[in-house]
Length: 171
Image 1 (spheres, rainbow, N blue to C red):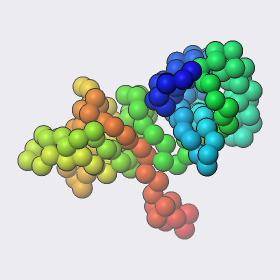
Image 2 (image 1 turned 90 degrees about the vertical axis):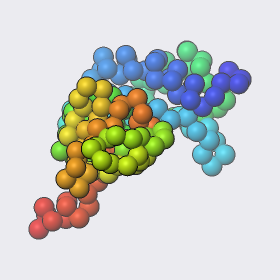
Image 3 (image 1 turned 30 degrees about the vertical axis):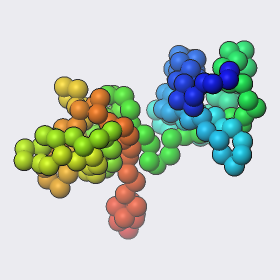
Image 4 (image 1 turned 60 degrees about the vertical axis):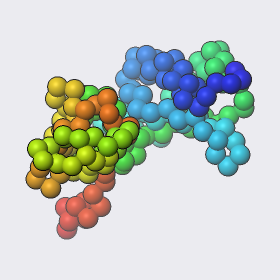
């Protein structure tokens, strides 16, 4: 399909795979279409209750390959990678923000957003403890101050793995 942008391919793949993966008990977290080391690569990130293992990735790969081949939404030859979203899992849907409440997150807006907290200057980045999703906004505690970032202003949000905290818990 000549002329289709990277974002459009990812969106088409998402719409094809999401219902199939949900039926099989998986959440489609992210789809990336990019040129890596000179080759086109389709990355499909999945999750499920209890986490994702290598067997899950293999099973999903076997499920989605024929779907993608029949739908023929991707013209060039490509590599398919299926994996878990990792420790820095992206957060997109309102339910993601409630599911990971209490976790440390980083939120990036499309542009500076004013009024996220009383007296706070306009900003584009926040890092803090996720409180959840309320009334169309993501709530997070940044250094003791509650900020509300409108969901439609968020370009990217992801969990931040706390290495030091994890090491302290193991002692």
